[in-house]
Image (cartoon, rainbow, N blue to C red; front, side, top):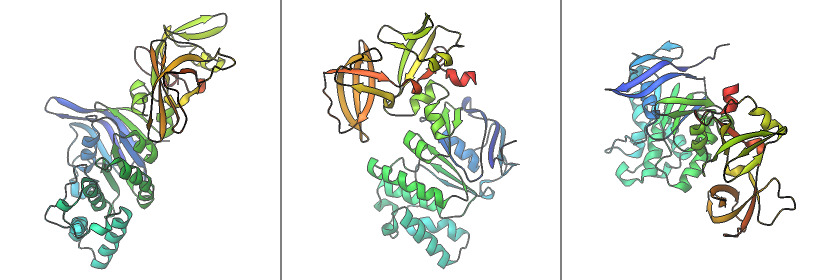
Length: 373
């Protein structure tokens, strides 16, 4: 059965002069979906939004909106609302009038207009600033005004370009939680949301498209993109601290499979050994996220399954403890609870959770399990 897409790219490409910024776009967004475009700066996320909005055109290929080819439909006829990262507020208008501008253009009844503006400004916590001008607002407040102006109008499609990017960490965390309410508010519309923040992508997206240099690397549900990334790039983009990656040799002997390099050696359990049984090379890259290690600061009774190392450093990030360990010559990063006592420069015994191992081809960087599917 074919997906019922309301936004769809077919063989989409975009270039500026000779610079190709989008290529091989073949994917769709489903009705009422909160779809996240995630990737680093320069990946082509904002350009994609502008093409959907009609502010840019594909160089070749097709864009479909509501099942109809939309390449040449003018922006005002697309029923699209967009919030830009750079605010784009009218400097001579108050907050109220900035938000009201699209409603006035539609000649909306003043009573309904006031009700809408009151609702959206309360939801975004800017209801106290409606009489101020943009020059009297902080960067974060301006961003909320731009978001409010986009959301105050009913629309089929909302395109949100880094709407939390200019907020400080505390407010960004608060608004990320509040976006669950915004998602409910927009439940009858389709949202395409751009971010370079993996936490936003994981917490908000119904599905996530990971972008790199104008191409889609992976599309999937948040848990799939995090736990089963398509390649090393997708794996490293999701999570801070970044995933630990180890170049490993595969040794098969006496019915057992062992991954070894000059610093570490790990016997694989039967399930993991089976997963890589058809891997044609005798090398691979092992990925283990910092979250998926057990550690002990006292010598375990059975050291067989543990890697012994030394703790070189410790810091707290986002309410989690980050332990920097050294196993022989290799640094290993491990997450723990922030309140744990960590003996810096003391010994540590590490045990990775094999059910969370990720295996990547050492030449292509592709996930071996996904490549086998």
